[in-house]
Image (spheres, helix red, strand yellow):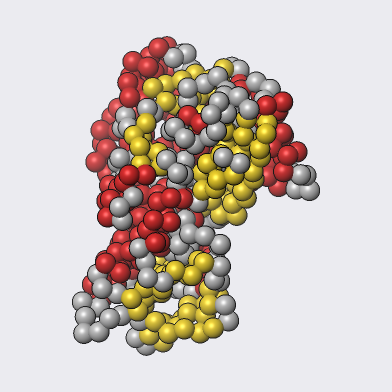
Length: 436
């Protein structure tokens, strides 16, 4: 580079922060704009009345190679702690626990699946062997052969009703925030591989501690700043933010597809088609602080739709790692569907929280008398629907994401924190290459 280039990064979630950090590391001047009051996107966390709450993303995995590298690079690894990965599954009014550090033995001992359903899991082996090496965060289009039917159709065909209802369906719900009726079969095979490891990491001070640490390393971060328009004119980029038009040499738009389309209306071709077809998935996170600790060792509870249609999953945050809650207290994060959230409009936060607990009562018991703190967080766009055909169409659109001086980062390719970080790094690498 003959002179330092100035890049705008729009969106300070993990995709935007990843891109910004790598670009700054390579010698670029960076200005980050975030419309929310703080950085983090879906990794934002909150401390209230002594309770540390993750409002979005639930956990980290050592398999998140680029995320772990980024955390190490910014000196935030001391915030992470390896924890015992205990998973719960609700069935028949009980919470059945599986210790993922000894998944086979623990799974055989638990009764959340019948003997014949467990035996039937061997039918999944040929598919997993065929696609194991292709299940990563770099390129989900490698799984396009699986992208011709829903996760439900695949599970019913290969594994049967019971395994679909009590394993496949709840895994899709807690990870994709939709259902197996919507998500592609590619998603369930990918999730089986990604979370097959026996280790999990938690962030002692909440997920937001990581994003704040990254942002603290950046020279210029502006929260509460709304970008209305990103324009390309020759070799320059103009960003209209809070009514001001600012000139840059390039940009990374790191927002959900719908927002990206609004600020880049010039988007064309396959990319425009793909972004236009990405439907928002809304959700509501209901946190409930309890005077006592619920009787379960699970840190994450899978909730089949047959057990509680409106609950996508429950994080028992007091079981995540020490120091998250006051001594002797409990903390639940109930992740509710967007339709349920809409049905609660007009009610007080406490009324909404109690209604969420009522939905969980069949397997967690009546906890309303133990409540001492509630917090609600609405997500307008917690993810986009990964419907059948999404990865086949992504193959055609993906090259456009990084072809120009305005690049696009986010969980477009693979879901989750690692998907965002990898996408941000790809945008940074593309811009570094363009200005080399």
